[in-house]
Image (cartoon, rainbow, N blue to C red):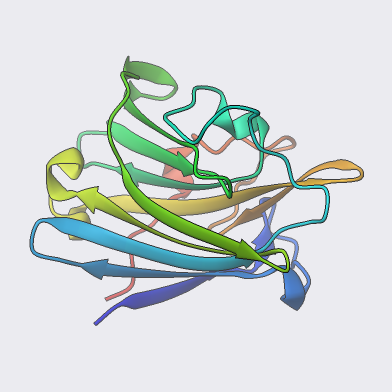
Length: 174
């Protein structure tokens, strides 16, 4: 049975408009974790001007991000964009990158009328521990006329967005 969560607040905990919410569904499969989502894009959404592939610096554009923090404090960051770009980084601890080599990611996406739908498969081997033992957070970065908007599943109590504050993450509901 999939777990459904909503990104319905801004990164700092202030509520987002209902039309801006992103719905995420997480389901454990035999060898992977399936993540499906649907959310709104702004008319000015941005993407890298290169073919869809592993793309460093993707957080500068419109993305959905998911972080998985293991019991030892190391964590995995996955970002996906509405034009098919992605990145996967492995961190040893707070912002200390352990691996940023390109990894293949099974990711399908569709954008119609500024509604972005996507699905990705995260191999269990990438998590290195059962997902039930990982603390998790989801974010969406969207371009707007004023700069960027940031949605979060679990908010962060900072003046500026810092999505690597893993102490703010929590376990997926069961």
